Length: 317
Image 1 (cartoon, one colour):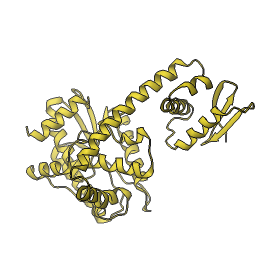
Image 2 (image 1 turned 120 degrees about the horizontal axis):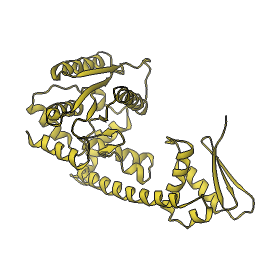
Image 3 (image 1 turned 90 degrees about the horizontal axis):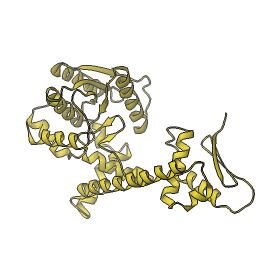
Image 4 (image 1 turned 45 degrees about the vertical axis):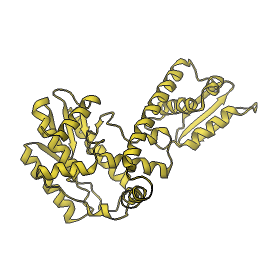
């Protein structure tokens, strides 16, 4: 077993990514990271008695190149003797990076549930992690967003997350594994590409040649801090029989925001579009010394401060 695979195996053990007889859906695009991940899991499969299926999305946005990606994935499925399932979204119109991501993960999750599998493995590497962090700084994010990606998030596992792209390419070369290169990665169509092609090389050349490693370690520290604060916020939330304005305002500001987000998420699960500005508006209303009730309307919800009580309800449309 190569040193590279041993590193992945240690990562999996430390982060509890899979167990004996785990059932894993692998997202395989045909690019180097996903091909590397597929080969490693296929090699470790017998040792852990892993059950694996391949999932591939052909967006059809790159014409013949998109079809060649799919053809390679089909060949690999035959090579490893694995079942592969494919999705071709109907459309043909240009879609954003986020829309593509949503389509992909929705497909993976449907396959996981339908086939009663345990987790979904994706091939994010160290550079992907650093690029995600910088994207979120540029767009604006709190501690949770700056924690970037985790080795394990719910049903998603990322065994290659700490691996540099250079090591992945060396592994593929040594194993003589073919992979597809997305030509659009060299263009600046998406913010991620601009960060990869322009910002990171500039930072490496002018500020810190080891900037990727430095940022990766910072992300780990931020993620640990976020985890602790979230745990304290959950404890503070559980202690409240009813949400009291006085009790909320006595909390540290970092806990105030998280307690309110917890309440909002219970009223409106999956509330990704709740922004920091909405939370600040609610806190401002809670701090108000005006005698009358305070009301804040946001994203289909209504927050009312009535005396010492905080009430959040879903609006009927």
